Amino acid sequence: MSKVDLIIIALGIISFLILFAAIIYSVINNKKHKTLCSLFIKEFGFLPGGIILAQAGGVFLTFQKDLFFLFPLIVSEGNFIVRDMKSEHYNFIRTLPSEKTLWIKIKYILFSTSVMLMLTSYFLYSLLIMR
Image 1: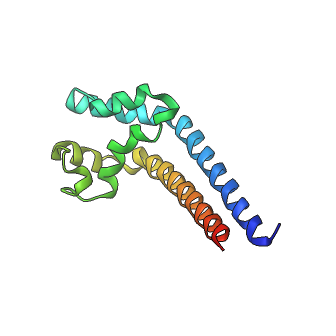
Image 2: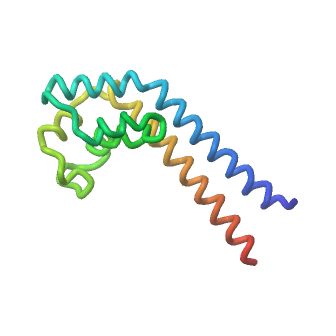
């Protein structure tokens, strides 16, 4: 087994470990998700259907349930991703204190890092198979 093969295997293993860490992090911070949902319900009297459906999906939709709160934190108002979001909802999420939303950013940084490492490992493996 060559050094390149070992690097590809290591990238794959590391990516799965980071993905597992992101899932564990999400489960640990589920109470913070519920707090955000409670604040939203208190302010607007309802919770968007997408969040309710994602919550019912459990661990399988653990990353989906927080996208409603993540997107306003990372994109500007009027952006394609938040085009259907009411400006009151967008502004409410944007004005939340960072200690209530930082965990969402960390969760998605872990998830994104895992996906990037998986893709890198896959493409390196594919390139080496082709030669």
